[in-house]
Length: 364
Image (cartoon, rainbow, N blue to C red):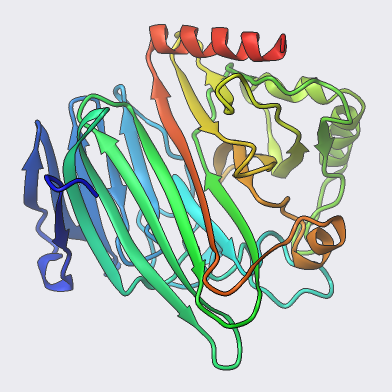
């Protein structure tokens, strides 16, 4: 960390029902408050919007609003719930998933849905302020130390950074294995945008069944309708049809697919959901760090979400299935895993530039 950066340790006593400004930096403000559910929250605001983070509950980005619109999925949860269960507080914009296992548990799996980290209790949370190549910024970081007697022991250190003039966030996760035995690692960045009705999803992935694999089975707690089965069969035959987000379309319960992303000349992959007004939402990740990508859509009466890309180390079929595919990594003693990505909103000019970048990647 540069010498001129500042770290402020966040204490639970500062979080009350009344929102209070904690710090300012380069035209940005950081304020703290506590939801009626008891969950502590940190709001970072700049000239283009704001994010709400949960410092001690998974260090989730609970909500994001940029360019005058809310980016976050809609759900039945207006506020986060103090819980360790994934589905008991399911509505955040960004959720870290993993680390020992991730995805929907299979018949022989014993791990919880999307692992132990999504709503994990963090022992330390810090507000970081400073200036880097992107200008003035504010960020949330912290540590979660996971310990299980005669079992895994690791340290997770995420970072969410917002610059003063940005309509997007930079997110990273670092995990170090502290145990004296190999640690299985599965990680997924679960990014949940609100669908752009009538919009279109752009990326450099070829529209064929080899590069876009539609999942034809559902977790056992879902009961698919005949209409859902027909949609899955149609998309499995022609995966490119999924890109247009038609008005009034129902996806109940969920559409899930695995995608093979090529890297562009910068070593990155761009995913863009273009809105009808020419603006967009986007994710940029590195396939070298997160080689497996999942796309997740749900459009029901209770949830509206466009997970246009969930970059990960594995797909979302649970530990046993991903182990069989060779998608479970193992970290040795004191070995570290690190990944970083960018996600947020783009104005018309930025959206046009991202589309051009995707088009160039397709030609490589």
